[in-house]
Amino acid sequence: MVHGYKGVKFQNWARTYGCCPEMYYQPTSVEEVREVLALARQQNKRVKVVGGGHSPSDIACTDGFMIHMGKMNRVLQVDTEKKQVTVEAGILLADLHPQLGKHGLALSNLGAVSDVTAGGVIGSGTHNTGIKHGILATQVVALTLLTADGTILECSEASNAEVFQAARVHLGCLGVVLTITLQCVPQFHLQEISFPSTLDEVLDNLDSHLKKSEYFRFLWFPHSENVSVIYQDHTNKPPSSSANWFWDYAIGFYLLEFLLWISSFLPGLVGWINRFFFWLLFTGKRESSNLSHEIFTYECRFKQHVQDWAIPREKTKEALLELKAVLESHPKMVAHFPVEVRFTRGDDILLSPCFQRDSCYMNIIMYRPYGKDIPRLDYWLAYETIMKKVGGRPHWAKAHNCTRKDFEKMYPAFSKFCAIREKLDPTGMFLNAYLEKVFY
Image 1: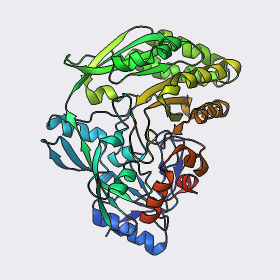
Image 2: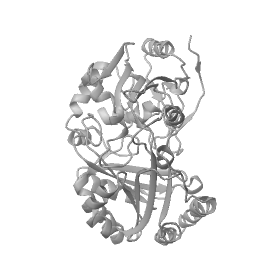
Image 3: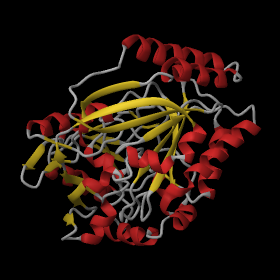
Image 4: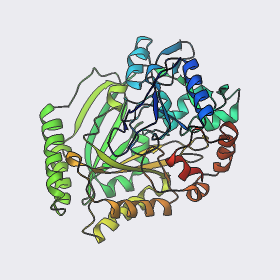
C-alpha cells in the first residue's frame, strides 16, 4: 500500500513558484503509482508528477495529488551494441552520467543542469545548443506511459507511434512516464573555448560560427556591444580547467549578487555592471576540456526569473538587433547579462518548440539578488512582443503569458496533440492551472 504525506510544501529551484499538494507520494514501483491513480479516480482528484523541480514556472504545481518520482530512479538495461540505455523516469541525469560512463557511453547533448529527471527533461522540451543536435527529447527511442485509467502503453516509432510523437514532449499531461530508452553515443571529451567578440561580428558571420563549432553558443551583454563566443567540440586533449574559485565565485557570484542588489536602488548601474563584468571575466580567451557532461553542465549562479523562446533560425539577427534597439530607446528599462543564444535542429515532436524548423533559442534572465525581485515586466513584455512577431514559441518549462489561442497559431500539430491528450486523459486528471491556460 502506497503511503502519502500531508502538509508537504513544494517549491521550484528558483523559488519563484510553490504549492501545497493535498497529498504527496513517493512511489517505489509501478504498482504504487497505479494505486495513487486509482485513489485519484475514486476521489476525483488531480495528479501532478514532479521530477527535479527545476522548471522556472508553475508547470509542476498542484493542489491535488503530487507524485515525486525520485525513488523510481534505476538503470534498467544497457544495450552496448545499440548504445541504448533504458531508465526509470525518476533518475537524475547527474546519477545517470557515471553509470553510462561505466559502459563507455554518454548522452550526445545535455542542458545546463543535470539535477533534473529523465522524465522531466523530455517532458518540458529541455534543449542545449548545436545545429546538428535536436532538443534532448530527440534522443528518446522508446518510452512507457501509464495512462489515467491504469493502462500501460509501450511507445516507440514502431508501436503507438502517434502517442510516441506526442509523449516525447509530454508536459506531464498524457500520463505518468515510467521508463525511457535513450540513444547514447560512445563516451567523449569536449574542449570549450570562449573568446570575446561584438554583436555585429557574430550576427554577420552566424553561419560560419555554426559551421566552425559543433556546440556553438554566444552570450550577449545587454546595454553594450559585448559578446562572449563559446565553442565546444570533440577533443582528445587531457582534462584541464580554466575555472578559478576566486573569479568564478568570489567575483562571478558574490560580488555580482551584491552589485545587482545595489542596482535595485540605482537601476542606472545595470549597464555599467554588465560592461564591468564582461571586462573582468570575459575579455580573455579561456580554454578547458573534460568529459562531455562536465563541460555541458554549469552553475546557474543564483535565483533568477527566466524566459527562453525558440524562433526560426534565420530570424536571429533581426530579433536580437530589435531587442537591443528597444533597450537603447528606453534607458529606464534594465536587462541583466547574459542574453544566451543557442541553436537547435528541427524535429517532428508535436509540441517541440523546434517542430519542423531549425531554431534559435534566445534566453533572457533577471537575477533575484538575495531573493529580491527586480522590476522586469517592461523588459519581459518587449521581449515577448519581438518573439511573437518573428514567429517564436516559448520554452515549456519557463515562464510565459501564452494561451491556447497563441499555441494554435504557433504549433501546426497543436490540435493533433489535444486530441491525443483528450483520448488518454478524458477527465483531465493530469491538468493543473498552468496546463489549463495551454489547453482551454
